[in-house]
Image 1 (cartoon, helix red, strand yellow):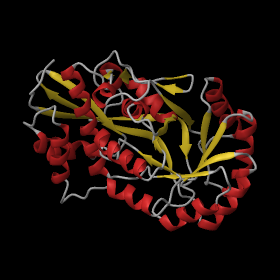
Image 2 (cartoon, rainbow, N blue to C red):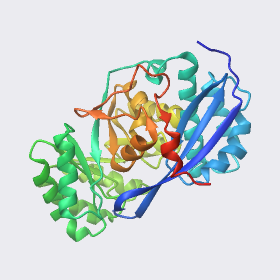
Image 3 (spheres, helix red, strand yellow):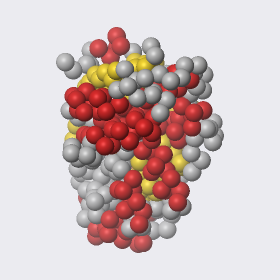
Image 4 (cartoon, rainbow, N blue to C red):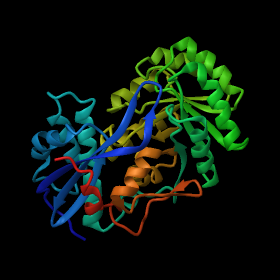
Length: 365
């Protein structure tokens, strides 16, 4: 076991991976996903972290965050996290800056695991062997046949809950939800995600219609910035339908405001945005204090370890794009088995190694 190792270098690389089909949700369309990878080095070891964000995060890491942590003890992650948050002061915390910090923090946790020869879940203290997942995709760009195939495929793989996108054409949404329910059967849970596409009254009306098809999760029915609107949905949504939001939280203050407003039944947090694993732990503490379940947003390989260390995390989003990219670019990427995501405790750190040859074709100069 190596201890007392000074951080000597942070390197970055950017990869842009095309989607396997056109994708859209209620408010956005995309044909590729950008991943910024950080490699943190100390005592001859290298830790890997990443975020799904603008390529602009990479030069920001090199110019602003790397000087803030260089020379610090690699085991003192809280010291590095604090130094980086101070360095962000004049750059603005939300958005790309926080995504950059998140990637570095994840790399530091991975590095600490490699230096101590322990998996991150053991550094944190495991609470369970694995965490439930929900299959996530069902994009509004998909035909009904594509939607049915994808959702039914997850159910066949043993995943008990699935999520689809809505909101692009509100008039079509009920028919698409009906088709999804028919495809997955009566027992599986069905989640929907509007990505803030509806107005408050639209969302209330749609919630009643979706309840007929036993939708149990309604994510971002209105904009996540509309805390009053979300609170209205929490109060008036049909029984058995949870209102979820929080994926755009970049710091603990965001999550606290959302919880104080009673704007969610389930809080979401994303370690690639909210300050890495360190920031995710802060969001989890807030959710626990309010007795609100927490759900991890996307990036399953990054969330597997921290969520297995937190007993009140409800599940991890097994997002089609990120599962695909993690499998393509990393050895050791987490795979759901029988609906559970289990961190690999035989590998140190996050258990991920970049497939450099495979990744090179997607690298941006």
